[in-house]
Length: 188
Image (cartoon, rainbow, N blue to C red; front, side):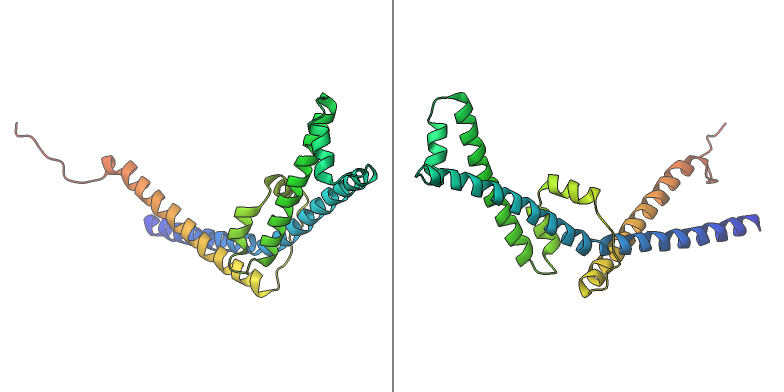
C-alpha cells in the first residue's frame, strides 16, 4: 500500500518535472530570435562607431595629401615608437571594421533555419556578453519564434529523458548489492 502511494507520488513529480523542463526549453529557445535581433543592433552599433573613427583618420590622411594606407605606412615606418603604435592601432581598426562588416552581412543574410549556426560561427563573444547583460526577453509571436520553441521542446525532452535514464541506471547500480536475489550458498 505504502509502496504504491510512493510510486504514484514519484510518477506525479516526474510528470510535473517533465512539464517544467519542457516549458523552460520552449521559452528558452524561443528567446533566440529576440537575442539575435538585439545582438545585430549592438553589432551594428560597434560597426558604426568604428567606421566613424576611421573616417576621422581618413580625413586626417586626406589633409596631408595621403591615402589611408599611406598614412598608416608613414606611422608604422616612422621608427618612432609612438607613431608605430598609432599606425598599428589604425590598421587594427581597419581589420576590425572588415571583420564586423563580414559578420553583420553573414548574419543578416542567414535564413531562419541556419541563423543559429551562422550566429555560432560569426558571433563576437565580447558583443555577445554585452548583449546578454542588457538582454530583454520577449514573447515571440513570429513563425521563427515558434520554430525555435519547438526545437527547445525537443531538446529539453531529450535532455530530460537522458537524465532520467541515467538516474535509473545509477539507481540500479547503487541498489544492486542490496537486492533480494538468491545468493550462491557455499556447501558447509
